[in-house]
Amino acid sequence: MSGVTAAHGGRDAARVPVHRLTVLYDAECSLCAFVRNWLVRQPQLVPLELVPAASEAARARFPGLDHGSTLEEITVVGDAGQVYRGAAAWVVTLWALREHRRLAHRLSTPAGARLAKGAVLAAAKWRGMASGWGGGVYRRGDGWTYDPRDGWSYTAPGCEAGTCTAP
Image (spheres, rainbow, N blue to C red):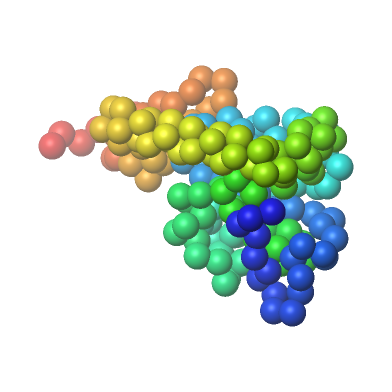
């Protein structure tokens, strides 16, 4: 698989068995949150742990990663230090799921890899368009919160208790 690197020197990422995967996802991205919620409902052959990208937990676990890039491109880390990015990360995540392992094997062929890369590029394009809609990405630090049942809602800074200060 292209996009695979070994995080631990001397370990061959292509030959070391994978027993657990950590998926780093952008918790501020509605598409990423949707996919995260979908993943946790899927039967898993290899356990997936979903951790917000660039979070304190991710930084503590993987100090050698470029955490800024994990917000730009899906990144999956194997328990033996394998690092998968982009299309390879999507394929290895599907490989971990019982009902999608056959699809992952098809996507790991040269023809399938082109399809997987196209899917990742389409998701990136959607994210780019969504970030431009409404003036930017909805960020929790700006007063936005997301509830899976109700969607995004906004509380202006300083209005948490229902009272707002006049500008």
